[in-house]
Amino acid sequence: MQLKEMSGDLLFPIFVPGQATAGTADEWAGIIAPFALQITSAKWIPHAAVTANGTNYFTLNLRNRIAGAGSALAASRSYAATDSTAFVPETMTLSGTPANLLVAAGDVLTVEKVVTASGLAMPDGLVVVTARIR
Image 1 (cartoon, rainbow, N blue to C red):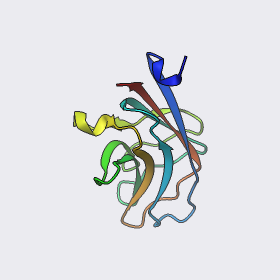
Image 2: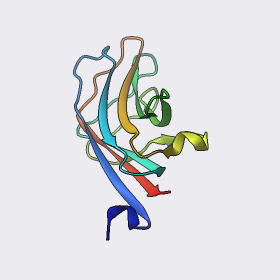
Image 3: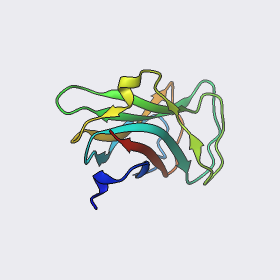
């Protein structure tokens, strides 16, 4: 049996290195989709607590860097209002646009840190993407 023949949910973990510099935006390559997928959920597991700030914060985005066609925002987690606890998985907000959750074979999923105002430091963590073969 090959992985692409499996049914049900598949988990794709993406390690995200922390950033002590609050105001620095960045993006990290995660995985190359081995076949067509539909993202069904994404969770963020920070390795340290994060205290939200309504003025200076970061947003963690899961992006699909569609081969040759730009990008789609699949999921996000903002630190404008809600704190995190170390090692407690949090559900990221999925895109309300169904097409943004579809990944073609060969597309690259990335994790992006976007800062607002002077930003907020970000700990190491793990984004776990749950997807089904389509």
